[in-house]
Amino acid sequence: MLTEKFYDVINKEGVVSIVSWGECEPHIVNTWNSYITVTPDERLLIPAAIMRKTEKNVNINNKIKISLGSKEVIGYNDYQGTGFIIEGTAKFISSGQEFEEMKEKFNFLTRVLEITISSSKQML
Image (cartoon, rainbow, N blue to C red; front, side, top):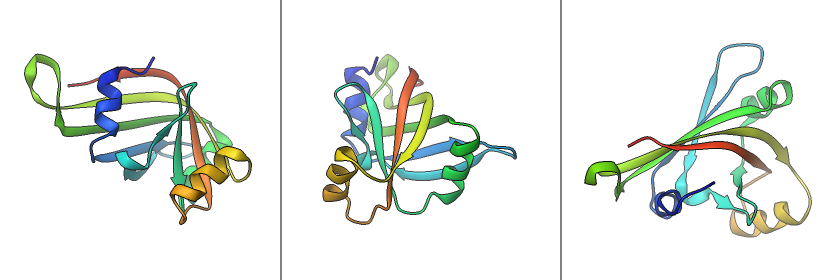
């Protein structure tokens, strides 16, 4: 599901916006492209240090959307920059092998946001 262009984007620095919503209005939190780890089965693992409101929302409604991009990757029609909208379901993990592997890379994390992708769309 994830394209080579997606991998090009996460290998360049850029901001990632994560949108969650529970019983109230949507909540947005940000992270960096370089913090995303893609598993062999194409789940996204993102270190979480705070993200308390996101976790509260995910416990009510596990649907999530993220937007990410980089101006350093050429998009459609040879335009400078491209981005993606990812939709999926999320959960927070705080133990296990993947948690430990992420903790080795990002010692600041307290949990890991795991996203199982249902759709990925290149936007630019």
